[in-house]
Length: 269
Length: 350
Image 1 (cartoon, rainbow over the protein chains, first blue to last red):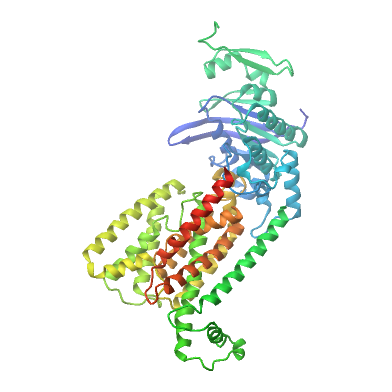
Image 2: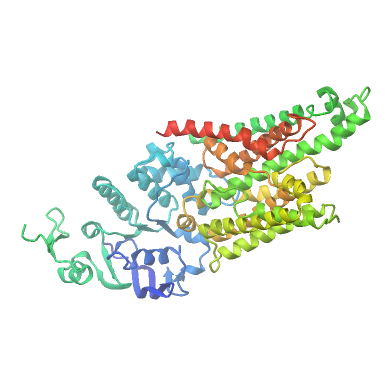
């Protein structure tokens, strides 16, 4: 971690309710520039809602989320899209666009109305697709791609926005293990090599521990723990949040924390 | 095919289809109950164009023929083109913003609203003209807009109108209004024919006023839709994706709903309810060129115009002098072709 990690996103006193039901309760959070954050926690803990608030796909209350000291509600839509990109959950696209068409949509914030993509936009799209290893798919229709390929194309689209911050909502939840690792490696590379600040919702705690600088542990709409994976993933916290007994070990390859569930019913087998 | 190649292809495809449309217009002029040759037809038209009129040869052409051509056939041909264009682009836009392949221009209940308006005007013999538009047409227009407003407000949640709500509200209001129309028809059996004919759609009463009115409404609204075509593309990826790419999704949807409603209300008030075109043409075009609305919208406009023109020519000539409702023709010939296309692409996908 470099020394100039000043905070790029600051969340203060964020509450969010849907139909009178409190989803997020008094969230306070500082995201430091250039780091990889994972939001983890059980189903219904508010992970996606938090991410959508930051991405402004749902509107947070005024003066609760600042990016570089400016309330995110004060950005123009297009200007905001130049700073922050968002890869939503479930990106199944049943449309007859080529992959390149989809990635070029990432250039929308930079285009005026009636202006079509210029050589520069094509160059950015090409670079984004090469970074995610999708350039060979450029002329293929998006609906014919496999889940892993499609996810990489959608990440390329987010990259084409040339934003400093990238949010991802469960980017690997529907992929096989090979594709999971490939996608996570890609995101990590973007984060390390190009300094993109990453905030990703992840379900798999072991993957989150391997790839993240910081974990944000949500439970019932509140941050119960925040810090480096070693300090966040403890047997006590997991028992408390998931009601599950686990054994914490160190991943023999990289020394990161790794948990092994102790299945209560079959523990004797 | 590379990206640039495809773009060039689209441009030439659109140019070709415009030429096809112009040729169709020229060739359908010579069809009709009165036997006017193509040569005479061209001479008559030439004689009305300021600079070119010295090339026309009006000898041997009866003034009756000239009148039929200029005051009956030509406005009808142009009207059918504009109606086909309008229905198709609204279909394309609705299928896009609702992200629903079954959406057609009447999905928000506009057809039954218009039919109710027309039925009321017919029953109450509203003869008065308003800005040169007949009372029936005006009433149809008014009820169309009212219906859309009602549907929108039923569907609205706060500042948004979720797609599912809109479609369901559209269906519900549609059924309600249709039952009112049935009751009106039962109670006024002597006007039954008029109402039924109106609900089946027809361009037989076409005149220049209608052509100019629809042209003035359609062309600017078409340009606005084109203006938003990239936004519609991105909205197809889902509302969240579109928002995160810098699009004010709700605003774009509202603008599209508003101008589509005005356009469809205008068309319906002139032509009655012509089904099928707005549903099928965008699909046919999509099967040919893909989902990009920057090409889909103009291409739908041209293909829709061609299709409508052909259908209406058949409607007025097939059993001449009896008119077949043009809505029957559009479905009769459009549906089998669409089924063929579906069958073909289904096989390709499997």
